[in-house]
Amino acid sequence: MRKKTVAQSGRTAADPATLDALMQRLVAEQSAFRAFLRKRLSDDALVEDLLQQSLVKAVERGHELHNRDSAVSWFYRILRNAVVDYYRSHAADRRKVDGLLDELVTSGEDKMPGLDEVRPTLCACLAPLVTQLRPAYAELIRRIDLEGESPAAVARELNVTSNNLTVRLHRARQALRATLEKTCGICTKHGCLNCTC
Image (cartoon, rainbow, N blue to C red):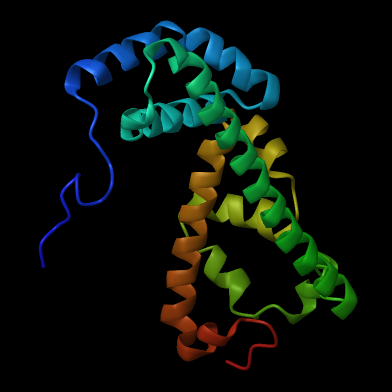
């Protein structure tokens, strides 16, 4: 199957000189475009993303620009459309999340059981296996998962960042999972609540 040429698709490609002039004009106005987006969006990373996406769109649609003098107003239209599209997609996502939350509240599944409710049903194998882990891993599992300490408080006490603690806790949980699977076998695949091993 042959690809359509630019002429067959109904588009006329902008010549390289025109595209170059367009990009120079848009890059010269970049700070104004950022300010325009910042008035409408609070996240600087999002501002940069939308600006870059809009610049790409301008290059792709450079053939639509018939008058170089109107390049800036034409690009503002692209930016306005990008902002509208962003808010539309996030409104749809928000409606989906709200709908799911309503379903969970209606079914009563929106509440996590407290640690005190779950603790009596935990696998009896867990406590001895935690002590077999590396001491640093065992401490994190014991303090955060079993005793319910705040990860932020543990991170401060250990003098590490929250991200570092999250990575350490993830590795500790992986090590515990591997140890549990080795000891309890198939029982761990279905969860360790009300363990029968």
